[in-house]
Image (cartoon, rainbow, N blue to C red; front, side, top):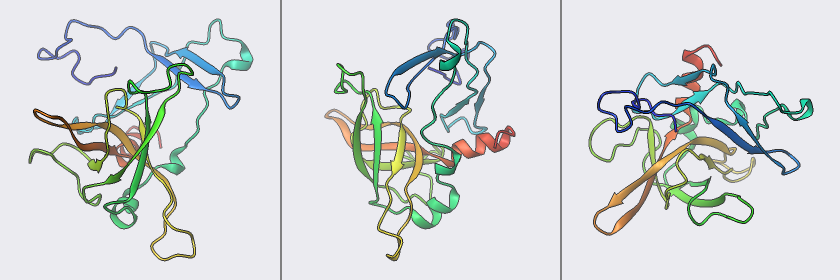
Length: 209
């Protein structure tokens, strides 16, 4: 876990120190790899701390790893990120979104995530807030995000076809953040994600674009 305030005086874990960070993924042949992040790897945050997203430099510890296995596998690139125009002009309320994650119901035998879907619930042209305070660049969606799904990519699949009016390509639209409770009954059925524009803004601000 990378938390902006983990060293602050009011933080729950203010006496803790982040000493190890591992990256696990799957290669194109479906084999699993795990690499430790190098202590000097840089982490970049958004200037608005409400946007709880971090960009991590993939500087790994390669000692002991065979030469032919020293690589990370990216399934999505910057070209798949939805930009501001997508949120302003293309994405609409009730559009389908899907997200992967490792909630308690994930495939434990194969150690694989499960995919779930939902519908955009707030107007994606504007930032969503659940308590009248600015909560960052959020979008609410109708769906059951559970513990183990936070930090997962959120996708908006393609809509229509190229010959149909109001069609669009599919995009990676954000990072899953969590759900809104409905006390005392539990999950409200509304979850939210941070817009992909948070990622592009972090990249641009730090000269990483």
